[in-house]
Image (cartoon, rainbow, N blue to C red; front, top):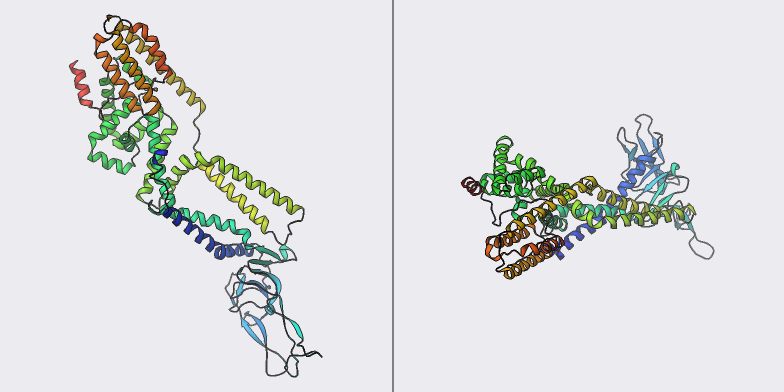
Length: 558
């Protein structure tokens, strides 16, 4: 609804807070949470089943099988590290490994080195560190303990074990027999979609719980609640106060009724008169179409049902049932969702009702086709990538492009699933046709009654003042048509029609026999400008409240 556009337009503060949270969470998740999640998943699926194989988690986070020795008496395991001793032979230092019963991993309090590994299983998900399998070092003479030199005087270099495997910064290294003999290199950018998903989801949840003055999503919730109230007013013709009362959350409504019982009763009387079913309309017409009869029926039902089920039961069962029957299930769904969303206003952590209102009445209505289009686009990208992979242009040892495409399509399909989940069910076509048929019959009956009434009045009129009366009637019908085109508010339409009819029927001297001749044109203009008035024919009073007691008293005096 454009009427709330400027009031609920996001400011730079809303965008700043939201994107700051999204970027920080995305970066943090990508560099710290994603590696742990992927490594945990791979270890759960591909860890060694043989208990004799020692899978060690080193101090720097690398998980790999190591060359170990076991103490037969205690069952403890150690990694042996060669160190320089005083003699010609190298001495060995034992590095103890910690282990918990039931755990398939052992833990070492030292960083990984190539000499520790047997290179059967290696899981390195540290993207900040590059690894080198071997490094060039000076060759040491075993006798002199000095670097050896060639005949030209240059130091002779030899290849020494360093990390035991090679990888670049930003790469994750995975090797195990179940995945093949060749190691698999995963680039961290292939999982950036996962980090973006989590970053934006958490940012949205946080801004849902922030005050609307700084929360980007919470402001959208407030805007949609205001828009939903406007839509209910347009669909039903109720004024702002009436919509506020019928959509008020249960606890607040009971408190308000205890403080203002007469005001609530006046509001309910207006809703009751506006939502009469067909059998009540027929019964009222048989009794003379008196508003007193309508108010008498309301008072009897109100007093009896409030005494049994309370004021809350009368509103939530009787009045809501009449609204659904008179308008549509969609209107009643809007009222129910709006009422539930007010729980979020009382407690910001109750985000689900407000999320349902926003998704069902704004996001799915406006962006459903966009989401579907993106999902198909993601599927097209995935098909291309799978095809290229089938042609061997993407090596099996570097599947990051595949992971990126799969996660992208997963994200788009998940968004489409959420959109479909919150899409409101369409009303059954047979019910819609039945309501259209009933509305048409009601309008026809109304026009027929109007014609009969005007014919009876015209039968006793003279010829004086015909021009003045017809000019006034033409002006009033033009005003009514303009109101229908510009305002579209049922209260204003009914009040103006009522004023025009009362003014002309009260001044009998100004109405002439020629009304019979003008009657067909009036009816045609009324049909052309849509003055049928809907399927409810009992108009409200033009005043803001209905004085039920005054109407009933006037009826008894008559």
